[in-house]
Length: 509
Image 1 (cartoon, rainbow, N blue to C red):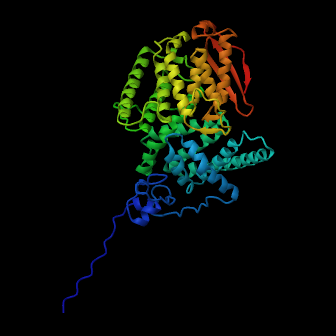
Image 2: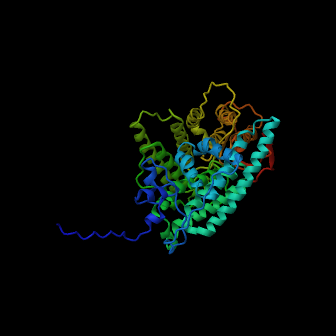
Image 3: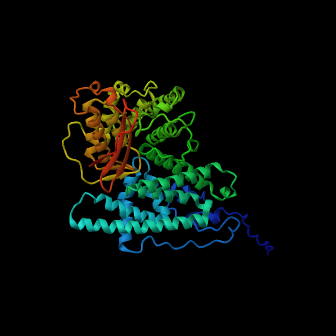
């Protein structure tokens, strides 16, 4: 008989925390999770659904797992309706052209685990549905809008309280979820027209992001997984950049955005439209937030604070972007103005080119040299909006909302700085035709404001060409405050021949 073999000893696993802190799906599969939040790339990269993470205690106590609270997505039919509305309508609109994964997947996944995000989602779904019914004047819709707004306010207040508790409980351990919830809060405030509160949330989020990026000496930084850090840098930081850029085009209130958060790479690489869009927005953010800002869409004359060296350096980068983008388009069948995405990129590029190439002069007459560029921008805007120059159809009354800075401020820029009577009125007509909101910008409010500027400059005279608008009558600076609830704008202006602001005017639309 053969001798009995000595039983093999059971191998012991080396102690580590990766599996304990990994997502539920990776733990079941016994694979190493990269801990990307809100959904790990081990799951999303293989087409699986990431089931989230167990709750964790503070660093040093990772041997004791705390069972994650059971979060029921909804408790009432009304909450279920708003959650579904967000998933099928709000997320799609907020995603804009390039953020579908964030809004349609990652935010919803985070909402299943983080109560503050769940209540923010329900609040946004309720408010967005109310917003889309604003143009309905039947009594039934008025009651529905009131109910939706009340529900939105309730869940938003709850989300703010839960966010504060989340920050106190986890601090830097879950800063990615705090930043994501902050983005939802900014979105909510912009949607309901509360610009001051939106600015407050945006400032707080930018400060947290800047501190997290700069202060590498915090011991808690090591507790945040590499996946979560990657999520902040590759997804959340670009969103905050666009939010800051959106706010900067609308107001001159200071914003704590540090251009070092997203530096311009020395070698631009554009291999898809999203990369082109992100790199162009990064360049714009550097122009707006550099110590001596070159320009802005709201105050196009602030170029006086920029040195020729500043302008030339960014013009060089813009030219490099144009070369890389043109080379990319040559590898595709897409034309520079054949799709909404490429039409928008063309319009943004052309506006940026105008801002940087005004011969370092503040003279408003200089804009008259850019009439072909203004016409090209309007052609791109028509493609983007799905309109044609000969269209006479009325706009859809259903309003739309997105967070990205897209076409409204561009058309507003053309209406203000192009003095050709046909072109500037066409820009105003395009903004008037759509019930559209882009962050803080409202298309019809912008159109009404531009109409008032045209009246101020033309003074009732017969204007056939841009040269008929006198130099001294041209508006070089403009201040305004929009009240979306009352549908009015309070404005003050300064003509090129004057050294003081006008009296305040209130205009309605």
